[in-house]
Length: 112
Image (cartoon, rainbow, N blue to C red; front, side):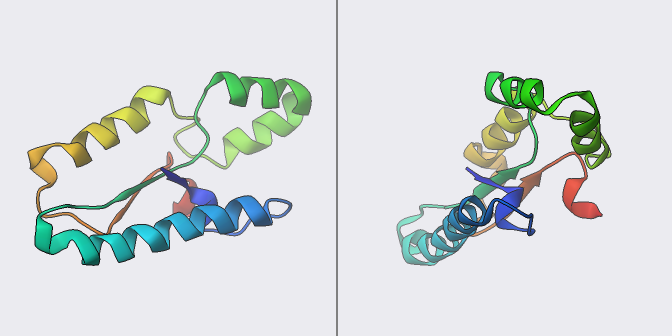
């Protein structure tokens, strides 16, 4: 698991963004190193998903700031199931020829 923060810049989260970008780089290296053994490595980069942690963050931000974040996601906030479905696909045989990839599950956040 990574985050869209590893793909695009955002103020005030440099360390977090750098750590998520590092996971993407690690995944790509592992994909090459492990391919001969038939092991695939991929990353899911999610944007804002409605979780307990996110809800606690929204409570501290207030309605106006929360709405600004929601507006940056054209399809709105995601649900945990949205990310789980992407992971299930990558674990399935339907993705047998996918390795070293970043699957962005972000409701359109990075399309802007």
